[in-house]
Length: 216
Length: 263
Image (cartoon, rainbow over all chains, first blue to last red; front, side):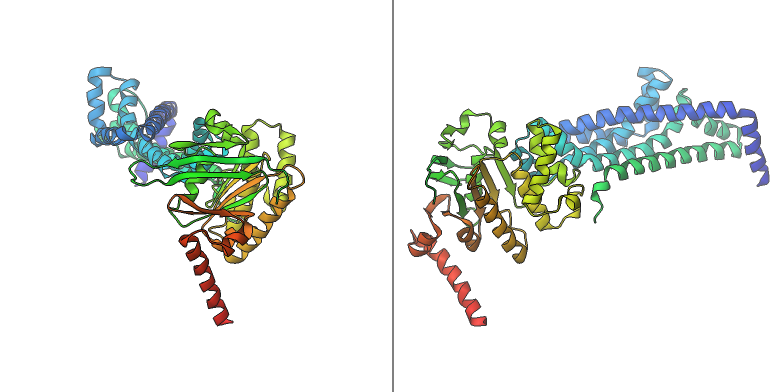
């Protein structure tokens, strides 16, 4: 037991620079995937709500993509995109878009019709109704989707190491191959902490934007 | 009532049928409303009263007929511009939850790009007009207000840019009896307060006959899309135009008897 603890300290003494660079890679991959997923997820969500007839089709497609294990997407994308950051980001995005997309659709559709009609009745243009009423009211729901996606991204970014994209997965896979428990622990806990930190951060943002919901 | 008879709202052969329906929601309505009147539209659900109201600010467009506001066919004007000239308040109020009370009242002035000082002065004026304390309420969010307080804000918001016409769709429908009576009195007083200056024409939809007779200078009684009677409250009670109006009044009288029996 104490041996593992000593090994962990030893690891940080010898590999701090490498560790920090992997941490930085991990965060960087996660943030890029998140940005792409938010852009695509929200955009598609809005399209789904505007073109209601195609909605089921689009959501179904992304649900289907979500079923495919990210590992498989990763391996498949090597064929088309090669190895490195690009394929990793693509594969992780397939995983992260569905929760954002679905929450965007649900959030936008949940806005009561009378809200939209009153806004229109006051003299807002269709664009103003979207920007001032529909999107702000859907925002908490969209943010909840982003939270879900964020956790999945940070956890799944570990497998990006498999195709040379770097990140904390490297420590874990190294630990697996040479059977060093301390590496597994370091990698695993680091990922968990990033995840936790991300959720806390999003919670703070969430609370800031929803301060209006507090009662007297 | 009014000595000066400028016509504010005129419906000419207005009909509307919704997609898939086999009857007219509003059927051949011909009515002329003078500036400064407080008109109540009385009818049960499905009578077409709300449809008639929503055609007035072009939330719906009539299938046939014309609607004129101060002589101008609203079909010739951009719908958004028509709506910005008309105050609109509904039963669910529809305050934006993420905006403060001040922000909610300022929505239409902001759409019209008023400058900041003018908006601030106006918001203070309005919140006072509807009987709420500016210092206490302007910085609050809608969730922190009671239903009655929210509807007061809804009225203030509808009055924001001093519209000549106000459309009110059962604004007190979800408010308890005591608050409701107070709000009715205050709304009547607000309408009266404009009599000397910028006179306002109120169009108030309700299914409550007491409310309709109490508030209206004239009352439109609607049934199955048609106008049964358009007259002063006194004349409606004295000379009901048809069986429907008669049954409305009778039902009201029967309720009175219940009260007398209990007293």
